[in-house]
Length: 228
Ligand code: SF4
Image (cartoon, rainbow, N blue to C red):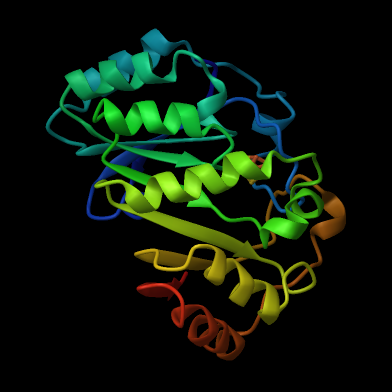
């Protein structure tokens, strides 16, 4: 594992659980609005040794309920499941964030009951995915991950970060169709803070009123659609 960050406390990132957040280094996408450029560009100031993470978690037994593993893209790391397994042995629940590019690893994580919640990004309608992530994409892998989550017994969510000029209302409706029947779909407001592509700093998201309309569009296809 290559770990580039640790947030020691969060009430909002793992539904229903007090958690910490572990940030893994590396991602094969380059979403312009990515909030973790140092993880994607692999320019973190200091890599955190795994041993240090285990020591921190030992000290938080009984205080934290869960651990969020996010990135970057955690499933790029071949030893991810061994890492999660150690965390589970300490008694923590695990939420895994993924961009869905490694369905084989997701399948193993689900099969071995190593994850308690999975959040998967839906970047855009599948047809224009490569444009949104600025990289070539194996769309079949994304489709397989979608099917995997929707057929799994584990709680999950799909989520889309929305910049107005990148995704039209029709695009949002198309994404919702592509995850038709999903339990939970979150429409996330783009927040312009530190991001991968500085040219996107001035980009805006939709207004609250427009988000309500987007939610209505998506709700026709999924069980629950939320804005955050
Ligand atoms: S937002 Fe995009 S570039 Fe950033 S970590 Fe997630 S998938 Fe990778």
